[in-house]
Image (tube, rainbow, N blue to C red; front, side):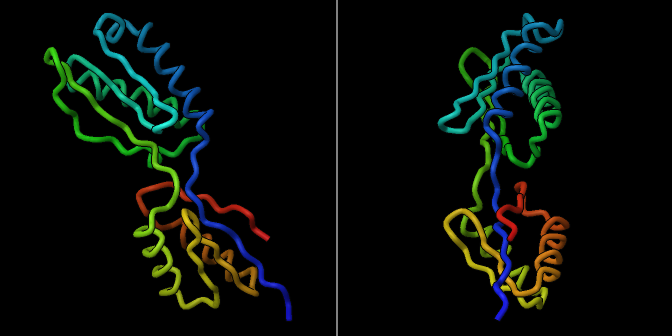
Length: 165
């Protein structure tokens, strides 16, 4: 019997590139004439994978999110990797916005991906392993079909395909 081929479906974010985008954003905030003296700040907590934006108004916070988003795109980070909370009122009439970096596939999303692959009626086997899925099959063509199918879907977070063998 031929050995099965497989690949892993993961959702990972390169934190070094996120940090580089964050550094570029802080530099732009300190230099841009419309943001320079506004009192707006952005912080990155790497351990918690969390952005915190403090701004004097909701409009300014949206401008900072736009600047950060453009830097993330240039660095090859999918914008679905950051989920933004609704603006919250903070002290002194300012606004605080939290952005969570999404990494790993949660159980609910993994089960949805598994169900969607099974609905394709391909001869593949899907196993959920912690924060990733392993898809295996004897046919490499079936695996390529699954990869193309998953690329066309939207699960609210970026998906990568690793360990293809």
